[in-house]
Image (cartoon, rainbow, N blue to C red; front, side, top):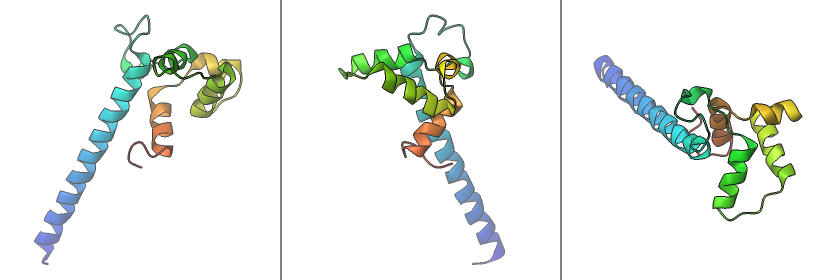
Length: 111
């Protein structure tokens, strides 16, 4: 393989990686929207400003016909946003934190 072929190969690999990251971002955004779509200010907030709340998690669990204890929901929020306590739970989970959780769970690529 000559130098030009190597450059083309690297460009091709770079494009594939960029496409994969874009697909992952789309998946994260779509999944995040499933949690936040019924929030009162959904249409007025920039998606990056929305946060998944306990109420959102409770609603999704109900839709999936899953009984999830309030304490478990609180722990989910705390683990996702890296904080502990009522302030953490009230703050909710932003899209970047949600993406980190999805990556740790293997639901999207590792970046």
